[in-house]
Amino acid sequence: MAEPYSIQEKDGAAYFIAANQAVYKAFFRAVPFEGEPQLEGFIVDFSFERDVSQCADTTVRATNGTFKKRVGSEDKRIQATLQSVLNIFFENNPYHIVFFTCDSTDSKHRGRLVTFNSWHAAHQDRFTKIPYCIAGGVIDEEVLADTVGGAIFLAVHPHHELIKNFVNSEVMVYNSIKAP
Amino acid sequence: MPNAADIQKAADRIRNGTDVFSAILRMKKEARQAETNGNTDMLSTVSHNIVPFNGRAI
Image 1 (cartoon, chains in turn cyan, green):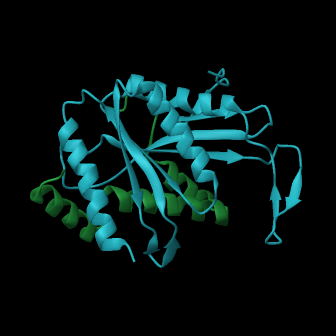
Image 2 (cartoon, rainbow over the protein chains, first blue to last red):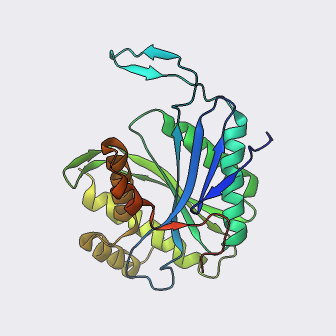
Image 3 (tube, rainbow over the protein chains, first blue to last red):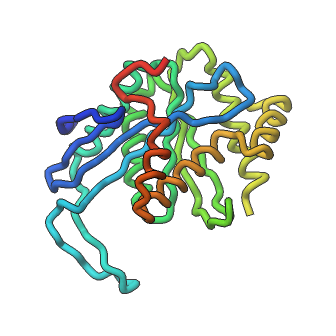
């Protein structure tokens, strides 16, 4: 296991700087929803962003003619740090349900999924993961790609069955109603 | 496997737009728009519901 980078907290979000000088911000946001009072306030979305403006400029031309800044991402410490953030969150909020969603507009979603899947593989004795795929479509006049991800929660959560049914029913109905 | 009542409740939430996936997709869309437009007001709105990663939320 690679050593996580040093994590700084600012306004509730976790920040760290990778060796290539990319600045990462990882954060959990409360997800508003209605209709299941026992879960309200306990569902969060885990996201992270990357600012590469301080990275060395290694711009390359992509096959479609656009220019992209290649900063390299084969850094195991980044994954280790994001997983460390997830550990800290669950230590403080063991009864929360963490959703991670990765849209497939670029190929990066596979790398993001690996981060969460490998975290769960190391914690599967303590946490349940429900993987899902939300079909893309036109939502609020915006064309969205497929979204893949999962919901993670404590295996001994007092509402374990409720959560499982809640997530599975939303996935099932969402895909049947919203999918093109 | 969710039962009929679970499925009905999920269908009601999704039709009303008060389900989890609509909320998550909406939040991600707002974040993308804020980033694209450089709209700092919108960014603060996007960030207002952050749950501190290193503190108890409830």
